[in-house]
Amino acid sequence: MSSERKDDHLRLAGDQSRLPRSGAGFDDIAFVHHALAGIDVADVDLTVRMPGGRWDAPLLINAMTGGSDATGRVNRELAVAARETGLAIASGSVSIALGDPSVAGTFRVLRDENPDGYVLANLGVERSPDDARRAVDLLQADALQVHVNAVQEIVMPEGSRSFARWPASLEAIVAAVDVPVVVKEVGFGLSADTLALLTDLGVAAADVAGRGGTDFVQIENARRPEGGYEHLFGWGQTAVACLLEAPADAPVLIASGGVRSPLDVVRALALGARAVGVSGGFLRTALDGGAEALVAQIREWQAHVAALCALLGAATPDDLLHTDVIVGGETADFCRARGVDLAPWAVRSRAHRAETARRERSRHDR
Image (cartoon, rainbow, N blue to C red; front, side, top):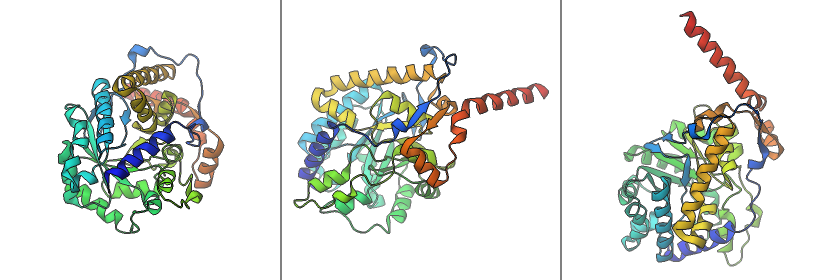
């Protein structure tokens, strides 16, 4: 891994973030509007409990970069924005810093500029348990984000071609570190079967990171002089599809991949995500306007998420799980093919009221 590759990734991801995005599935989700269900915005509390600590809002500045002078400067802007808004923040893969201490500061700036914030270190699933501990120590991290990226590796000119040991490697990492492990796809989704396996391996949280956001097939294909992997563009599932088919005993879920607006954030929370990660949209703002512009954007998103929660009658993000959602389009087709019954999602508020009334009667009877 080289600093030049890190700069390539940043440049190509930045270019992608400026293009119109579609195909992430969020537009397949609509809320049933109940005109008298609203509450006061002042009564909405956006804080959420996550493995390893409390977050001030269900938003994450997701894994992006680090490993070169240019990416270190971007990380500083992101860290300042996280500090000023109270958002959790994840580093890009710190693997390069474990082999080249001269670039460690380009990652450590996330902690230096944000000493009291919730910081996730990021590392590839193939790394050793000792490397995992070193990654956590480098950032004094509150959690370790372990990325799984087989599709990216296949297209990457210098990528791995050996994936069979990944489950065992992940299990060893979970056992080795003293902080929660968050498994993150890099844009191709985590299926229900994968989420069930992650539960068995002791993973605390999973970022389903679906297609529709930053496309690492396109990024790595652009780095190949001859290209050739265009047939893999659009591979995988959306975050929306992953949330809808997630098993009940899945790890704590984070959603990312093509999140464009506060409405997408609320949609993901209503589908079962505890928090939502944003990369491309925040990166574009940081590149164009620095920390000041990103702080303004994040505060606007926080205000809009709170307003949408109030509109839907949700005093907390968890209360969004009782809202009624209609699933259509390609996402509905996916769910039918995978055996996901969508009918209960459309009447959740009714079911919640009935269950609340039943509990109240039971309490009085006692």
